[in-house]
Length: 150
Image 1: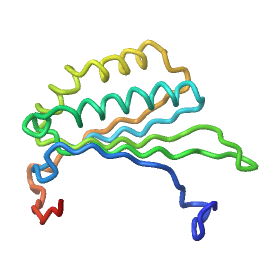
Image 2: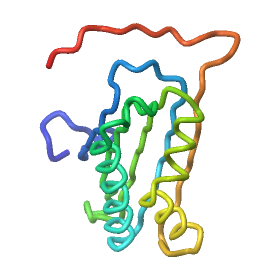
Image 3: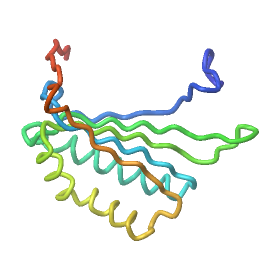
Image 4: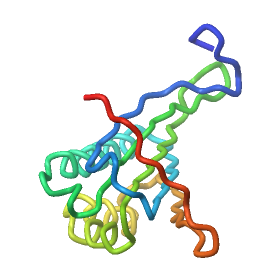
C-alpha cells in the first residue's frame, strides 16, 4: 500500500465528523454505505453530504434536538494497475431517538434534495445500502458517559 504497513485488505481514505451532543445517550444509528462509480456522482454526493453535515454542525440546537454525531468516511476504490475506479462512502449518523432523526431528515433541505436526486436517477452510478440499528428491547444498550477533554 501507499502507507507503510497497509496491505491489500487495509484501505486508506479520509473522514470527517460533526458532533451535536457528544455525551448524549444514543438510541438509533443509521448507516449508509454508498458506492460511487464516477467523479460527477462523487462530487454531487460529497457536496450534498458536506452541506448536511455543515447544517448539523451550525445548528446551535442540534444537540437539544437529539443529534449526537455523524461520521463520514470516503475510501477510494482502485482496480487493476492501481487505477481509481470509484469511491465508497460510509456514513454513520447517531441520534438520541428515532423521532429526532426522522424529524431532522425530513426537514433538512440538503437531505431532501439528495434523496430526490437519488430517487429520480440524478446520480447515475450511486448505489447504497441503508440500515437502521436500534438496541434490542430485551437487551438494553450498555452506555457510559466518560470524561471529555476540551
